[in-house]
Image 1 (tube, helix red, strand yellow):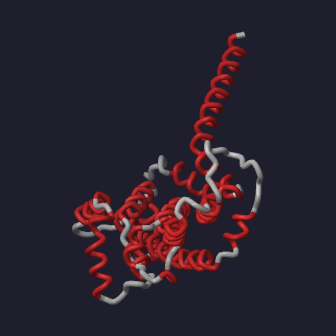
Image 2 (cartoon, rainbow, N blue to C red):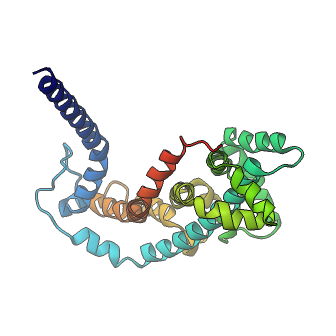
Image 3 (cartoon, rainbow, N blue to C red):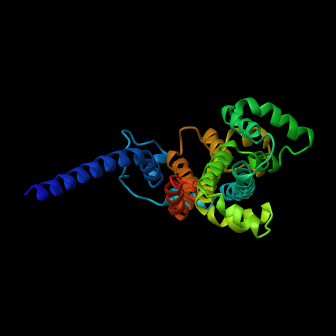
Length: 283
């Protein structure tokens, strides 16, 4: 009887936890669900429904049809794709190399240099706007994609994540490769890089979100509308239309987050692996 009661108590506890998590999950997802719902509500272009409702009275794909026929949105998507892909590739590649160097490398000033990298995490973007703007203006790179692609080359958060990940991998792998005569670059690309898939996937998602959603810095360096990214186009569309065309605005916002959702769905299993591996320490 006691064994059965223990099992029943465990099931009740599990069910209770599931219900609580489900309630909080629905609460967290409700703004996103409302955004998608308003995008399917054609009457929202006249007046926004109040009180807000999660299911429109009359479902219509009118707003999304206009969105996918919008030439400026397509152009901003292409611009964001170019900027995000380039900055993610550069940022993740540089962070993997830097994280490996700080974790397994042996050179003078390593700890001091790593502290300097960590200190960059305490400096928000706002104080860096003027120096960065002045630097790119002096070399004539304003109104190009380069000011959006090059700064992520040094990302303190990604470097820190990489170092912590490589710290968990055993040093014996490096020592064995050194005995075989391998150099540092060969050790990294042949031994440690194939093991870095989980942390690389995590960094790709983080860097992708940061770059895709970036608004302030592109607003400062891009004055040409033909170069506007998706957040800049959404902002300009909202300013032009004010509170009108709410359904179309929400449809645009929904389409803008689709790449992030797709990327996360493809890479989520690697993120789980990186979390699991974070507790494995090498000998």
